[in-house]
Length: 180
Image (cartoon, rainbow, N blue to C red; front, side, top):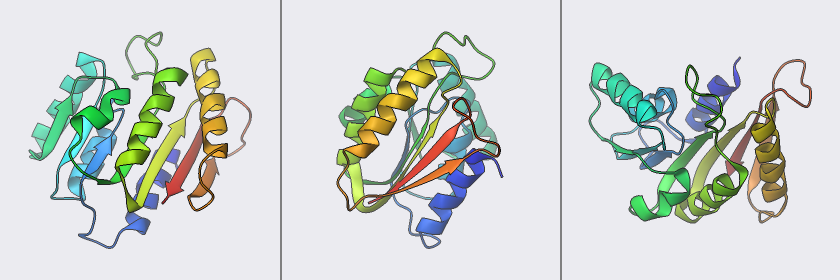
């Protein structure tokens, strides 16, 4: 099972059907996670990306599926708290670069840590946050190390599950699922 599928299943396992409220896709990319969230809540979903190409791809995916309760935000995920109203039940992060785009445009450790802190302040008392990290490229390696350090300092009452790819190495993706 792909790590993105495990992230989706972790969210579905956490919430009873129909109970997922407001959600955030902090790195919408091509819109797969955004569409997943839109399919599982009637409440607002916010989707962030700094690349206009990603916002456009996500918009097209949502329109084709007939969803209109998503707020697309062409801004960095570190600005999440400035755009999201109230608490959210779920925040998804899929770090790295936009597939089929300029691979030099990647999420960065500094802004990602700001985004994680912002997301944590918006997450409901029984929320879930998924962090999919890609240490297989230089920016991704630095980002993954920074995220691991961030996870270490979280309060002990936040449960963290780690999922690794089959045949893991230091460069294979890793998924962290946080339950508050």
